[in-house]
View 1 (cartoon, rainbow, N blue to C red):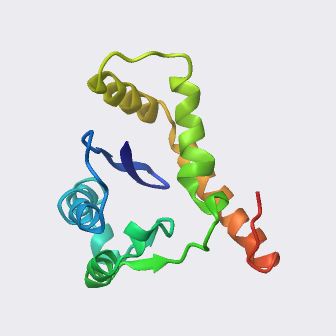
View 2: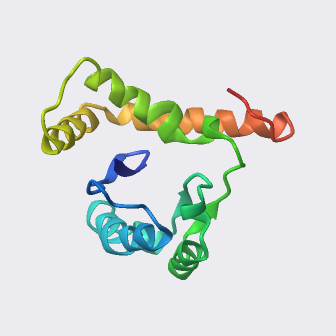
Length: 153
């Protein structure tokens, strides 16, 4: 499993979760604090100071108090994600399918092979892919709002 954080300019952090690790609110919070925040500071200088709109789906790990408290402490504006709406998660409708195109048909011998192939798949995505993901996301959100909050896919 990989945690992937991206914006319109590309991937900010790709974090391979070690095999056997259970993703808990505490684990996710630690990734946000120890991995994502430093990656933003390094790859997007000034972004932390100008303000961050943060979106993730509404998995229990993401909505846990420990996580929402750390995001509030960072003053990141958390964009809500409607329940049962995988159609509104850019990773699910855009990033992962693009990565799968690159990975399709390959066999991997080790976990490290998977990590490297995933890294290459992400690097092969051009900036336009990320811009398109966010444009599609905005269109889907608008469609959802126009449908009274209903599923749009």
